[in-house]
Image (cartoon, rainbow over all chains, first blue to last red):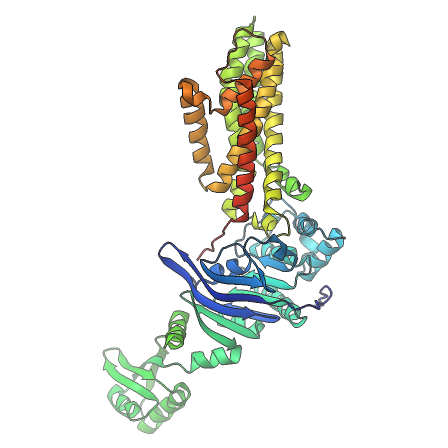
Length: 317
Length: 238
């Protein structure tokens, strides 16, 4: 697969949020978020309902902050249509003009931007997302992944310095997903400022150099993916262990500092591990030394919600 | 005006089922006129009643509603309007373009069918055909602006529009003397009355007021819609 992107941008753009909040009546969707999105790929990570789309809409000029400021290169974003000369937006909503062909859709984007050679720009953008083949079919006949790619092509047609993508990998098959991930990475390497939202850590860490974690509308963590991964791994973990002799195993576990709490229940042993690496190497050794058979070792709080909850509780501590 | 916005809007309005909604009432009007002609002896009085009650009183507000809300409300509802709004184009220009599309559709489907139906019935007798088609044209333009504004202001545009068209224009505007002054239907009739010399046509609203009111309502709606579009907020699915 070869990819030729349009010429690399030379000017770097910065999106800045300063103490941004957004509320709907009594519901706070985004709470006092300050972050700077610079050149390269940034992943906005958080569970569903965390306020990612709300934050992204404020960066894209489609939502006014209730408090704080959102700027692009120092210019106010809200009610400023001039920002779209620099910004490309891929919204999460699937809806596009189904009665247009892919070609007509991307060409219309190029013409709306007032580009000097709209047809050339549209052809280049469609090539970039591998949609040159089906470009003459109506969009309503496209699969979800194809619609997503044609939306990306329309967002890239004017070679924007800033690209905002809301859950861009949703609905794509694995090959399309990898292709778009490569493209996003490549665009980021060219110095563009790219932000995409996702609720899947693996997706974010494959593409983004920088990760911003949003939980319950609050900015819970920030760093590169190693830092975020480490913070997620270092948290206390809860496990349920079932074995041939729960009582003996529990006594041995509580004697070690890797566990802060061990309790015996009808379903086995509930363990709160505070030193995750030490606990995971200790447990099989103990079982072997005590001649206890392990029937089940399962995490009880591995869902993303509890990982994010831990991050937010740490950030507010 | 923006040619690309107009092109997409025309395609959305004419390339799908909505064209049948736009064509249905004009076809019914022309059909009725043809039938009256066939069964013999259509007179000026009948023509004026058909134009007043059906063309201006029923068809025009409904066409205005279909075209005015249709050019923008569905796009706001399903989010496709982002394609237009996330571009370096002033939002009032987008609103103006959408209005021109809606107004042109009401003009073609409303005013033209009114002229054809009236002409079928009584040719150019007493200037009825010319008067009502000009009234329908200007009234249709005002309706297009008002209903486009409704489409931008609320997600229940069709419901609000139907209530306005049927209750205010059809009921209150038709029977309550004070309310007639603020009825687009009456303004359109006033214009028709001015051009036509038919004794069967009378209007409660002066021409000066009707034209001024139409200009104020049309321009005001357009400016408001443009400003509202500048502040259009989109919320996520979260």
